Image (cartoon, rainbow over all chains, first blue to last red):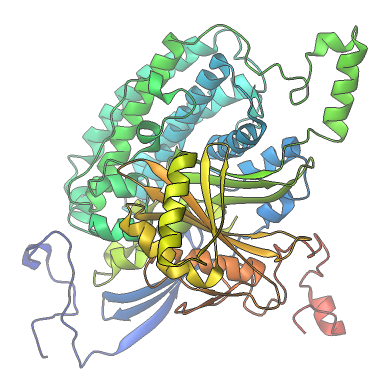
Length: 417
Length: 169
């Protein structure tokens, strides 16, 4: 066999990591290339993702993501819906970040309408979005840990996620795809006792986070599967348009909540966790630290939750309160017009970017002056981040393929829309 | 966001290099928009990159039906240091939908240009692999166009297949 390359995986202590990243660059001219389909039906793809992978022995030489298996035409459907009816549809794009999808959409509509959002509504949105971020990171953590063989983490993660869904059920009436955010604010104020439950959750979550760290951070297998694997330099990630925890893990402290605060994020004191190497371990560590920061934001928002209305009082956009319908003819007319035709939005184009659990969710919205969007497009971070995946796994072992894919955290609903 | 003055200065700088490059500027809801000639997109984005707009956050298509030229492509640029955004847009007619691809300079545009091609039929010249990305490879038509009907598509069933009424045939 020519060169120093062994296509068999050797014992771990024989693999020398001179630089971060485990790239094996010497091609063995004797070795045949093998092209296989990874997916679309494979549990480790976390959805319906097909990866056309070229292998040389056990080393991945190239991979090509093939997507579109769960394309449901949500953007096209939205063009056929009134603005208020488009919210449940847009929530189903990235199904682990429904509050972020809904907020990106509502924020874009509110920018077009130049609608002022009451402070209480903004805080309620922040609380729900941060709970959503924890939910999304938990689901990422538990499925990734499962992929790496830590099955107990799977049950622990679902336990905490379930208490978040209980909170959503209490405040919004639904556990997933809640349609809680609406243009002008939120659908309803939080019920009595919700804030206490939420505080109980953040306190419990911090304790649990310590337990997760004890399980995973001191686990030799877990660390060896992650450290020095799948690293891509920050400038390459920037070229590829990668945002979110993947970029922060490579040491770029870019977070829209800090850089261009929206929805009152400037009121809260929180940190942006960043990594150093940008390997899989950093990606894990950054997300874990973000859960902690989200708990801090939720506590601050609950402490400072302002009194006042939970929705704007522009009667041309927001439904009138129920009790007015019995006494006011005007309210009845507004209600009728809003439910049947929907509100009209001034013509124009906006792009509304927010920081979600996977990076920048940017809603592009074009209005032609009618009550339905003329074009709605979600810049979904999973879709853009997926392009960095070939760079992450090229010239690494196939055994690390699953780990890197798990740390990429792609949500196929968001990729295919 | 560059304010209205900053936007005009930026546009003037582009006009100084090539008088025909900029078609229009618009400042709407705090966002700066530069509309350009489709053929100039490569160097305009390069110039803006040199000005600090180093990130291409999003490429998406729009159908302006019934206005002409119908198809639009938008490039959302981001300056991470100044936290500044500018949108570059261009418009092409449906019978000559050629736009130079920016994928060689901006690898992030790869999948996004493919999506615009898939959904609107804009042809990105110089794209390394311009294939459909979300719709099936053998699909006909560009579903995000405004004159494409919603729900008018036969579903792939063996019954349709046997009768020869499948849309793939």
